[in-house]
Length: 361
Image (cartoon, rainbow, N blue to C red; front, top):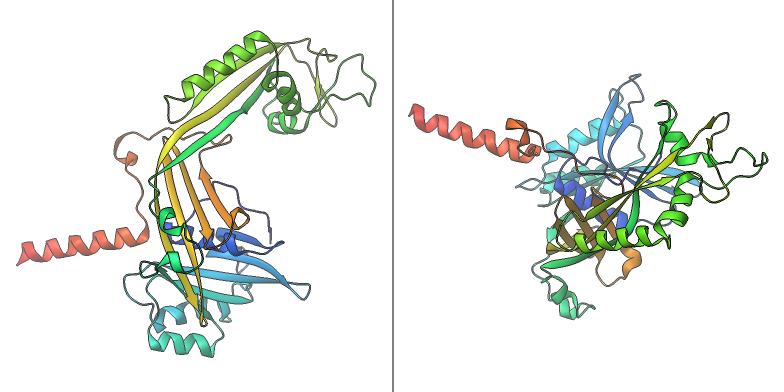
């Protein structure tokens, strides 16, 4: 199984799962990994994979322990039938998904039979509720009441490199690897004379340049970012020769000539509309409280989860469409409508059925 960390823009199944994933990320210990919307192989059916809402990889006694979290955002308490469904998914002989433990998180709790069934099978149950009942000023963080009233968030990303390209163009099959890992190397340099990657060169010679035309361009970009929620961009063309290197990016086996380097910079400086809610996660007699802040700025989306009473070290952040992930163009026609999650589709079917019944009556 490949246990790499998920990308910052990993696709998540629904907002409730996303919230639970962020909470688990804020709780994880050093060395643990939280993977969202993960597909893992079925032990008994070669080539078959199963979806896991959230997978926590931790270590106990030097051994790896995989914990599956199923996050259920349902209007009623989770039933025994649902618990039995997950027991079959993870622990039956016919449909074995390789995890050591199972945790079910429900927004609206569990029925008595579900609690009994879970206890008999060593399945942990957690409930996530919006924590409106708490007097946050009396539980250790006096600023929490003000935190829940946040309506905006200042978003400021300083000028950063968003794209680098060279001319003449690199072969498509090696372009990504060369741009990321290739070393600048002049034709008169010795074999070991390397000048860093294109990124480190651009940081030093473009982003931190003292050349008047580059400085003026960056200042203009920063000024334009104040009026555009998506920030501002500038494309700079730098011709070779540059510094002590007169051309060529070299990978392990080949050299590629350079006539010019194109560097695209990006910056954001704006105020995002924000909403904040507080949540309580309870189970096994314990309880932990969290604040969930969501903010939107142009095509950017930000989410923060902070464990109550802790500082930034316990902050979990998810940001979409930033640091190279440009906003995808909006599709035309009916496909421009946002995709609904399973719960919303079920509600639509139920409403359509009611309308049909009224018409037939």
